[in-house]
Length: 86
Image 1 (spheres, rainbow, N blue to C red):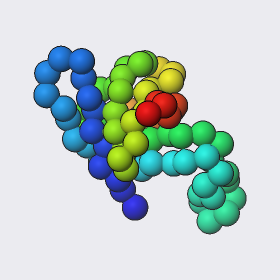
Image 2 (cartoon, one colour):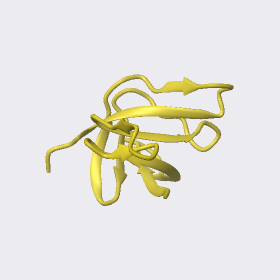
Image 3 (cartoon, helix red, strand yellow):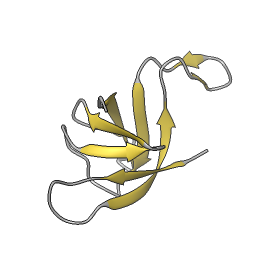
Image 4 (tube, rainbow, N blue to C red):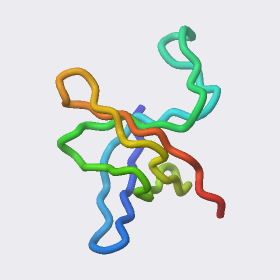
């Protein structure tokens, strides 16, 4: 199930895009893999994220904690996130 994420740039308008959001200890791939941190997978054509960018997913604010990793043919990207303290 996809979630809507909102990129919150320091200047300019916010950008909404669809993401596959993963939380720590979430079982994925029919129980074969455990997610150990917050991450999102999204279509590269939807948005460009950079290290340190701030975004909101499911009402919680996160920062991109590492440079995003392009997958396969470049159509999808995975970004690792860290939760921002309220």
